[in-house]
Every structure is written in structure tokens, then in C-alpha cells.
Length: 253
Image (cartoon, rainbow, N blue to C red):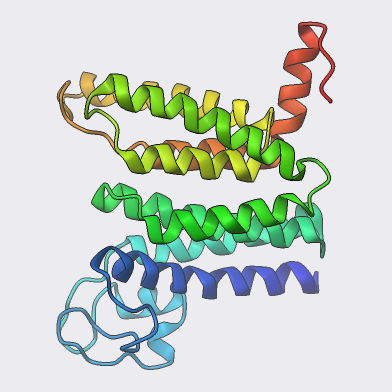
């Protein structure tokens, strides 16, 4: 149990770093300087105040100096990241697969939160992440560089067509993110990611319309749905794709 515990603690710490990224990157600020501080009174946080999740609970969700309310997103991101790292450690043990999926978890959680809060998918995240995803594909026997490129091309082309036809209903960042998802999952696994994306996005859109929380012309961030689809595909995509095409009498690769 040493490795799972280590990964869980590492995930909590990385979750704190993710919060810094999601706060600062959309504003074009450095993620290194200045050190972590209260957004209201600018007081530098102590070591204990930086303890993931626990600090939020002890402080009652507020800055101990000025009483500024800390967003609930902060402990949620820390807890989700810690839980994701723990789950990966338990599922795959100390392996390349664990580290690979943990890295993608970090990248996609950052994309998820930023797009949900600001409606932005940043090039400064997607472009380097795409290079990393392509490099990792060479080390992943289930993908390989060729199928990573095929997956990226398929997802990019589909979302580019939607972007053109939607006439402003989808942002260019979604198209670039689709290519990243394709590089990370490869072909045909990317088809599972796209299927989950469209189904989940459709269900949420209908629910928002039915509850009148969104109008027909209101934009809904699509990045979070793609992130969930990518997560499903990375974990279970190939077995799902193999099972489905097996029903059609087709053998993959």
C-alpha cells in the first residue's frame, strides 16, 4: 500500500498546483511568482495553509486574516486529483501506464476547470500537451505514433466541420482540444471519446434548456465534456471499441 498512499498524497499536492494554474494561466500570470497568497489581502500563505483539503476545512473556507471566502473549487480539485492518482495506482501499480495516465489527468483537469470557469481553452496548454501526447504515444504499445496521428486527424476534422457549420456555436479551442484528445487516445479509441463527448454534451444541453438555465443561443463550454470523454477512452476505450466493432464482424488492427 506504500505506492498508492504515495500517489494519493502526490495527487493532493499536484491538485494545489492545478489550482494555481487555473487561477493564473487565463490571466497570463506566472505560475511560479509570486508565491501563493490570498487574492484579497495579498498575504503570503503559510506552509500549513497550503495543506491540500485539510487547510480549507480547518480555516472554514476563509482567509484567516481578511475572511475572504476561498472558492469551493480549491479543495474539490485537490480531492479529485488525489483520488484520481490513488485510483490509477491501485489499478495499474507502479508502472508507466500509471504515470502516463496521471500526467493526462493533470492536463485535462486544468483544461476542464479553466474552460468551465472562463470559457477558454488556452493554446499555452493545448500545444505543449499535444507534443507530450504524441511523444508518449511512441512508448504506448496500444497506440503508437501512426494511430495517434490518425486519431488526432479524425477528431480535428470532425470538430473543424462542426466549428464551420456552427458559425460561432463552437470555439476554435475546442477544435484544437479535439486533436489533443486524438493524440492521447489514438485511433479507434478516440471514437469512444467522441461518442461520450457528444452524448454527455447533448444530455447536459437538454437539461440546461429544460431547466431554463441556458437559452438556445447561450454558449455551453464543450471542453469539460471532451475531457470526460477522453478520460473514459483512456481507461476503457480500446476494449469498448473492440467490443463494438466485434459486433459488426470487424477485427481491429
